[in-house]
Amino acid sequence: MADLSLDTARKILDAALAKVIEKKMKPMAITVLDARGCVRASLAQDGTSLMRGEIAYGKAYGALSLGIGSRAIFQRAQEQPYFVDAISTMTKGAMIPVPGGVLIMDTSGSLLGAVGISGDTSDNDEIAAVAGIEAAGLKANPG
Image (cartoon, rainbow, N blue to C red; front, side):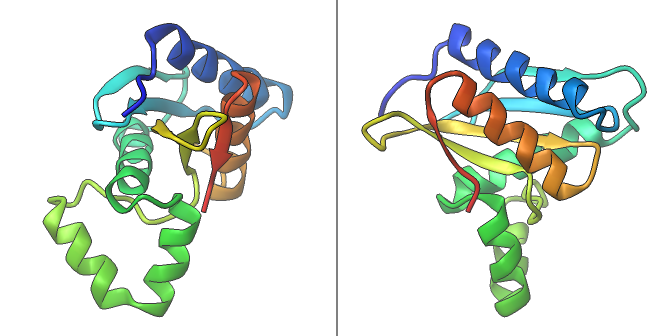
């Protein structure tokens, strides 16, 4: 398993935040997890609502749990709601099955971790996550 350094996690977080500011998105919470699911970097902008940090974490955690971006989990929830509900139960409710959880891959395709973002529309959350990952020279897999 490849490592996601703190420096790289901060680059992803900073670039995602820059995209949020550039696009004038609503206040966001951003969480970067390594491949083990450990938090490497996290922030909440001024004005985010109470649970945004937990939602951002849940999007990234869900992506890591199933090995697919949360957009794919969202699609699967529509096609197989019982399966996604069972996985949610297994993760003790930590998984958030909507877009905004994006896997971080290195240039060879190895999994490094995931980014979860919450605060605007799920599509905008995902746009910011992808921008952060790509700005760090890595590949984004939103699902």
